[in-house]
Length: 190
Ligand SMILES: [Zn+2]
Image 1 (tube, rainbow, N blue to C red):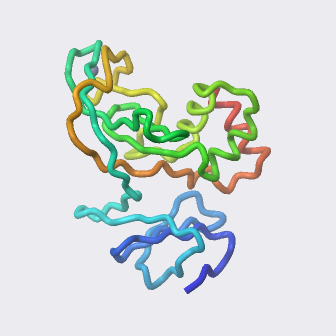
Image 2 (cartoon, helix red, strand yellow):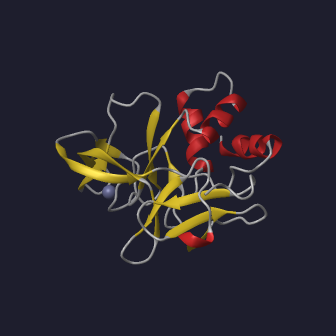
Image 3 (cartoon, rainbow, N blue to C red):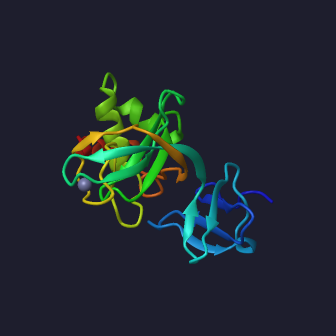
């Protein structure tokens, strides 16, 4: 099988039966049975969870303990530590969802070119703002407490806890924007 139209962002489910395809002119990827979509050249892997929701490709990432300075709760968060150069864990504004992204992925590379000389903080903030929300929650480059959503964190990367499956951040909403519009979105993020 091959991609039917080059404008389509064709997304493949691993062993499951559902595919997301971002079709030109539509803002949202739509799910459809695998047989209805050919596989793209660069398929992004998805799966359907037991609730029928479409989930992103996961990466197993070590988790550590963090403590919220606002509510005092201990919570678990994934961290790449020093292991993964150019990768970042984004956290949803409510602290309940995480996504990982590489600075060398396609959209981050386009953003990087639009932000020459920018600090890492400015860059990752722009990436987080452009990433597709998860469960309607905007992503941020900062760790948020999963109990009270505060980003006032007393400590993080504390005691090692385990491993968490973290989806890759996606940019379906902005990936097809022309450079001029992407530049506008990037400037709005700072
Ligand atoms: Zn808290």
